[in-house]
Length: 403
Image 1 (cartoon, one colour):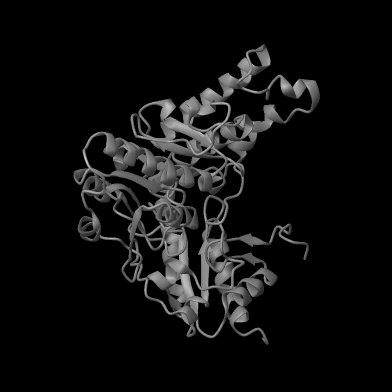
Image 2 (cartoon, helix red, strand yellow; image 1 turned 90 degrees about the horizontal axis):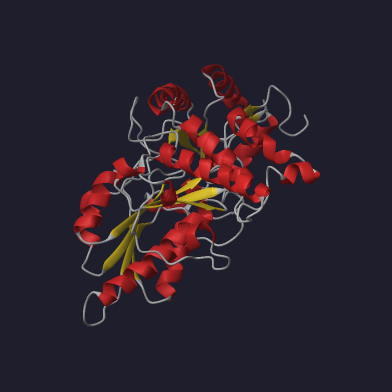
């Protein structure tokens, strides 16, 4: 079989990337014209020429559309980035340093600023947090419970007068736990700290309206909702202290220098509009697939759910199923299912090539050996119950390859 091109091949790795939606392709199509004709649609949006003004209008229309999809109160609260990794890095570094500087100006004496995050964040949050530690910040890493949740009480106990920033993800890409972000953000604000959330996996799957979440900053990625690669966004609430990560020409109101990806921004806005149009109905549909997969997979002797996700639960992502397969390494399972015509993963796509056990699973109290047997099945807009049934029919052969 040629790789991933047969119609019978079933894609079940949406948490890694979602297929491009036609609405995004249609929105980007005018920007794909080659030569002089193309530059009239996709010029540098910072140029004063007519083509530049056209591109600027397209960029700002995309900003307004994305702001509406995310629930931002103003379009200028949206900063376009090269992806969620940059948005996370910019939030951790930019807000922590600026908030610390602002706090110093408002008081006498010195103190060691604190940042609070969790042990199950994406590396795009954890590694900037480690860098902040190297720069002299205190960093507290909250440990989740067995199912991947952080409690408000945990955060309240970790908060101190020196806390300047809290960063807790909206939803985990591996085990699917959805955090109580509103309550966590309220606790941080009560203590005088700012709050950022990596909302990448939640957008389009659970309510991710930034005003309702009550956050000061949030990171998003286009390709997780059916938009193009290489573009993301950082929501930054008005008046939130921020030092830009990238310096240069002063684009994005001097908060993110670099010529903007107009085509990518337009595609992102279109995909986000589709993804957020009817979240409740789509989530309910996906939960039915999730619940069927958990119930049926659990019936196979060597397979056990990684977390306790009750039927119909809204505390977990509706499109992620995570199981452990006794005595079978993740890479083996992924390759077997691939040969049978199904794309699944052994955990986060950003670390699936690593031979190390998932830091998310080990933080949840799963042994390193067990974590090496993780299998994640994730799905979305183009997945139906028939495809889930086909996957389930393939499980016996994947478990006993000699058959």
